[in-house]
Amino acid sequence: MADSNETRDEPGVRALAASGLAHEVTRHGPVSSLAEAARARGVNPADVIKTMVVRRGKGDYLFVLVPGLRTISWPKLRALLGVSRLSMPDAQAAQEVTGYPRGSITPFGSARALPVIADATLTGRRVSIGAGGPGVAATVHADELLSHLRARIADVTEPETS
Image (cartoon, rainbow, N blue to C red):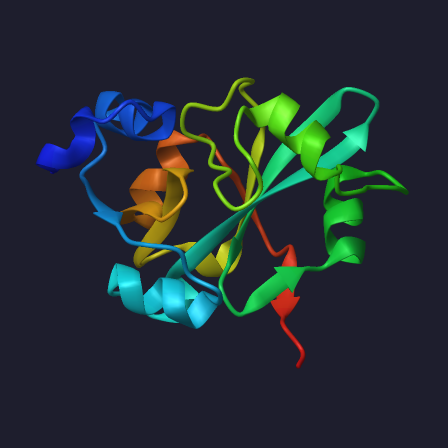
């Protein structure tokens, strides 16, 4: 379940520990690519979840969980949400909303509870999601994660292009 390193003062790790989700925390040094992060976490690149903050309107934000090797499909996400415009907040706004700097953002322990949309390709497998600190992640079963987060599951991504 939880590891002995969960006593560190990281809101994401504390929130994960309190969640009751079966998970394993991994701590690694800085990484410069998705492939490096996946190797350090012992998962495939496609199993690394990128937590993106999306701005729907003034003061209206949400999390979008995107699997590695995929990117948000803005037309799909706009259609799902029934809006004509979405944007990514700048780094400062994202940190104000979540309490985390870019690269460490996670729904766990976020300064504000935000709705979560998860790409449909995430289901049925173990995944690694950031746990609120540089080089800190949690490996968890995606279906349990998405249920806990009350995520809306939908087709909102497309394969990354080189």
